[in-house]
Length: 219
Image (cartoon, rainbow, N blue to C red; front, side, top):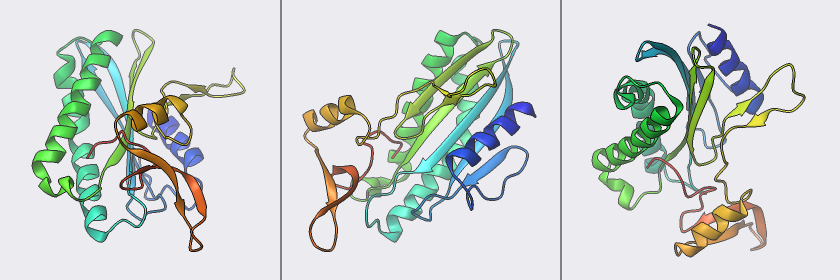
């Protein structure tokens, strides 16, 4: 219960009122600007006899001027992830709750989610729809936290002993990461601001084509 409370408080700080919405004992729905809501979830599991709490947050990565179809596809991807990520993490850990095993399992979970999205939604080839995701595995017995993330979702660790939260994962938002901007441009994409009604640059740096804030996502 404490892990769930901590997760909900973290989401509330990251997404001020009126988000998140519909918070209960294990979930919090996050309402970003696009109107396509994300989710937060904390699940207690056992891996190889160790009690592990899996905490996950996923939010839409909807492009500038996204279509209704893009929002619907994004919602489908988010829903699939909310239903399957925890069980997949347990499956891929294969009874080994060490940090190295959980990192490997996390990579396989993300790859599985990406493959599943592409198989289930062939329209992703022409419609920019995706979500960003962070997954944290807290092994209480080993006192270890393992994090995996893709996109702008990141993990922070806060405590009463520290004035500032500690960043546990890297943000892949091109606005905030010179390394990620270089990687995206080397792949052949363009990084630039959107334009306002007067044709002047506005808002954060985005990845084009598509107008996404990050090039790493599920979808």
